[in-house]
Image (tube, rainbow, N blue to C red; front, side, top):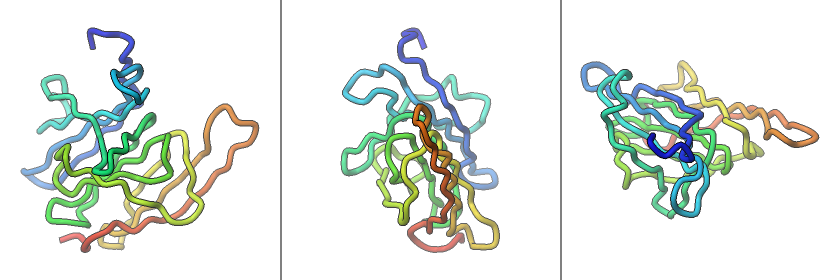
Amino acid sequence: MANYTLRPGMTTIAQIGEGNGAKYMLSYELGMAPGNVDYAVGYRLSSSPFTFGDSQDLQLVAGDGTVPAAGPYTVWTAAGGQQGTIVVSDSTYADIFTNTAGGDPSKWVKQPVAGNQGVSYTRSLTVLPGEEGKKMLLLNGGLYGLSQAYVTAGQWVVPGGPAQ
């Protein structure tokens, strides 16, 4: 980006969908972005994992106005809706963010996570096999800069129906 203070980083790429209709999502944190949220999570959608440079920058904002920030981690599962579910974790909220509309910027939902998952420096998300895409493993390595780090592992069930 022309403005070096934006410093996009902590990128992850996820395939969204399957077969010929699949697209790709690149998520990143945007340091020193305009507005009130440093390291706000942004994303780009593309038909190829090699052409994000031509794609529009979008900001992830949940329907309740929450803006996730720092360390995004993105996965997709075929469960949850006709277009499946995009799942994004960040380094600010214990909640996660979902989108069942192929990444439509007006369709993000903040979802609570049960248990003591807490906040993590880039929490890992894994779609578990054999569960019709409905269950995810969340691994949390704790936050940096603390005298102690708490590592947690737990599962989360994707809202909506099973994979089609």
